[in-house]
Length: 136
Length: 136
DNA sequence: CAGCATCCCGAGGGATACTG
DNA sequence: CAGTATCCCTCGGGATGCTG
Image 1 (spheres, helix red, strand yellow):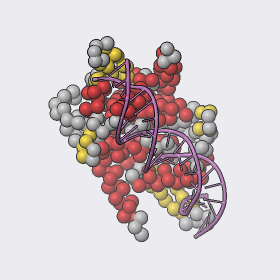
Image 2 (cartoon, rainbow over the protein chains, first blue to last red):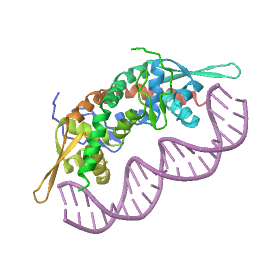
Image 3 (cartoon, each protein chain N blue to C red):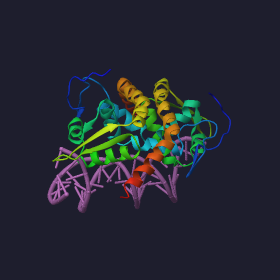
Image 4 (cartoon, rainbow over the protein chains, first blue to last red):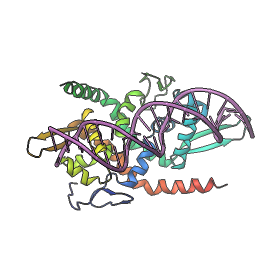
């Protein structure tokens, strides 16, 4: 577990080395940056529960604009996390559901989200402490 | 685990409801947004291994500017994930090390990073497939 | 209903130069 | 060595209006 070999840079511009240990060089950020968007985890979390239609997602996440809802859903779909199914009714309805890839991502991701919620008080406390010590 | 009660909005502006299930309303994003920065996970990953000095971190992450290195380290310190120790030598040296809180965060976080690296090919493939289907 | 198009703004972050 | 200080610019994302 503590393999200290190969002291090469962790990332070097375009190229990436996966030598020794892995963490986040280019490929990792290529994935992480997407789910780091402002609304990605929200929507992944919602769709992890069950499929939803566009309007339902709007209601679930009231603060999102339809522009960002559309865009984020497209990004998540493009990366293979969710599927989009159009029902040719009139007016049309569209359902979004999570894929297996999305579910496999959300498994570890949900652990981080749970950590964040559980440890939010500790983080806030740390900030207060830091800010006070900065008032020197 | 699948508690479907309380169909209230997941977040509502400034206020948050943690009703029914949790995912990421305000408190979660308050934590996530920080570690979602471009360099946060890089530095957390490095310092999860061992303490490093400023210059060492620069060498480990060649693409980062000293401005962002300083700023990201400060943010991580403020949120309680890392500690900063100054050795009054001349010239001065500063060591950064992970805290217990940081380690407890990195545990689930590293799982996501590992997922990202392992599934990067799947994501890239999904993108190609999506982009091809968009050439309609 | 489920979008797309357009305009616009602020924050995140890069480059460079200077300092205790 | 380990920063701080400026300048600058991209781009994520909000607001608004229109459509099949």
